[in-house]
Image (cartoon, rainbow, N blue to C red; front, side, top):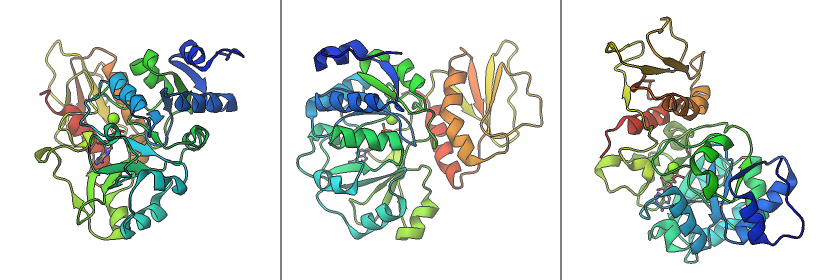
Length: 344
Ligand code: AMP
Ligand code: MG
């Protein structure tokens, strides 16, 4: 276990701990995380969706470190996380009635809203846009951390840009290890896919990224929502880039549930399936089952860990069974399609 030494200055403390994973169950870890944020450092933290790479949302220099450590292009804005609706005043300039309704229905939770931005939010955080993406996570560690930091926290997923998002502290360490000052370990994420993003900045609500709060749930609260036609439009969310959330290993989505590819003699292939298969599938070098009972929530929770596991095996190709694009299946298929998209 890594122990903080008394009496060493903040800079030294952060250096000493660089990239260390600390259990978030320990209140000292949360206090340390708060101090790191206040001095412009980076803390990876658990949320219910995926792990985030957090910095002080009001500090442009700290935000620059986030972009640098992820190798994230600066056209790609960050989500600002709050722990209390009172923090909204520091982040957004105005709140339309539909925004209030969505917050009442789904916050705290995995829903990000894009709204007119408050001037004090640095341009780097919003990639120069006049809008800001804001979310109140419902993970107790995320909430405690944001409160301790005493400022809204800007944070994208804590992984190198374009790769599969992290759902455990170890995933963060594998991808960004020495580039963050501290990794707070809150266990595996319960949702497992990134937040649903809805823009309320235009004349009509628009879904920018599907997530575990489904379009059906959103429509029940605010009526009709436009779906973004993603790749044909200029991407304002990386969730809209045609290739993202991607493994190193080429991924192919099979045509239908139960379809199996013809493998070449020497092909080492992996198979990712939603539920337990009737076939033995022993031609594959590795098989990952997302949910033995076919439960979409369980499947989403396991999706990124399963993709990372298959990607670590040096396979020639990963084949994936599709799922129905209903409810959470829409978010799962959205991520898989972007993972399978050809490199540009
Ligand atoms: P990540 O946390 O890396 O999964 O991505 C954060 C998501 O929020 C990205 O899809 C961002 O582009 C999106 N986002 C952040 N700010 C805005 C904004 N002002 N307008 C649209 N999307 C945004
Ligand atoms: Mg990301």
